[in-house]
Amino acid sequence: MSLQIEGLCWGHSQPGGSWRQLFKDFKLECPPAQFLVLIGSNGSGKSTLLNLIAGSLTLQAGSLRLNSRPLQHLKDYRRARWIGRVMQNPLDGTAPGLTIAENLRLAESRRRSPFRWQGLLGIRPNKLDVLRFQELLESLEVPLADRINTPVGQLSGGQRQTISLVMATLAEPELLLLDEHTAALDPKAEARVMQLTERLVRQLRTTTLMVTHSLEQALNHGDRLLMLHEGSVRGDWSGAEKADLSHTNLRELYGSAKVS
Image (cartoon, rainbow, N blue to C red; front, side, top):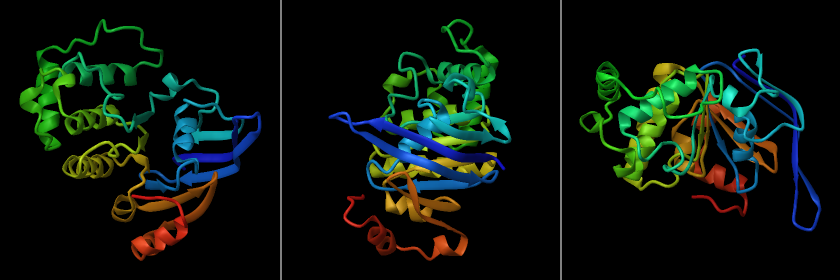
């Protein structure tokens, strides 16, 4: 079993002092190489679940295992050895003042070290690194190989998110977390990033959890679709069941929730 969550509990205080118990004895299992898409209305727990897996939030109870390796007591930077992540904002996943090659070298350095990364020293790519990164981008059909020495801050949002995705998968993580990673992009950039997402997930056979509000993405991508509602599973579809779903089915399950 690649990802196994048992008895997960997590809640938070609300304005006025009341307590909201979002997850209670939550359970989830994802086999190796499964591409799982998570949907649900705002506040249903999608991004919170990814934060708990990545270590940005701390489980209050329960266990979290990745390939039988317990993670719940590890800090987020230690989990990063095995977990890649792409956030919604293209500004979050890259260092804008560094070139594409330097960002890719940085991603390699952080994934290979079990310790918190402390500075920029030692991440300057040599000529062989630059050539290797150019070949990588070309193999992935990412049209940025000729801009390998361009600062990432000069790229468009879609280009920057493309580099974020390559960085997150560079060291072939055991688990990839995608938190609405196309939500801030225009339709053309969204399509290109999703095309690259599919290519990387299938080539690397990385277990993947993708959060989205797009019903189009939910229906057209992934092996399995999970709908969350207030920290509980409202629907779980794969195979023929997922293939038979329609926009109407999902909108009815959402109820009055606003979806894209």
